[in-house]
Figure (cartoon, rainbow, N blue to C red):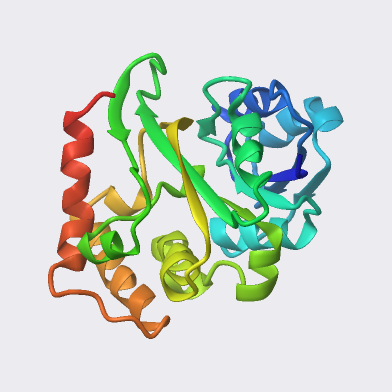
Length: 250
């Protein structure tokens, strides 16, 4: 079975971090877990110290945001497979990473992804949005589709070959990376038809109309920097696809 590394980026994440770290520590496969902190001023670092025995590396220093922290983590990890788990997120059961690694036992698979469940921050037993990703078809990108980034696992060699997150694209950095890997370079990807990650509700790109418009501009730039041309409706459909997720509770 391939080895796996996880990256968690934190900044003042004391309210949720312990649950995130516990969900990783409970996994049935060995994990190299690297935590990159942006210089938290709350109790985050005290929680990190408590979990030091299960963390492979910890870095705490100022950064340029979450994607800068992720890039730092990518430069540090050594596993054949790399995943990213934000401090607000957690794995729903101990076999998640075992299922992920089972996909990568097939040497032709370069990436995999699954479904994502958004849960209420105050009551994580309550689903507020369900993102069923579905089977991969590169044409779906042109109709506003993308995989849920927290469920996206890739071979580390892809980051070495195609690069990490583009810090100039703000909240669209993960979208751009998946466009680059899946559409521009056509890597081999497999869908795992089950929920891999639970995410507490919230999100910068959707916090206001101003942020949504900015996110839309960055989404367009994500296509441009890859030399790709979306359909006229692609970037309108991308946020509209979320409507169905709100109406579905899985």
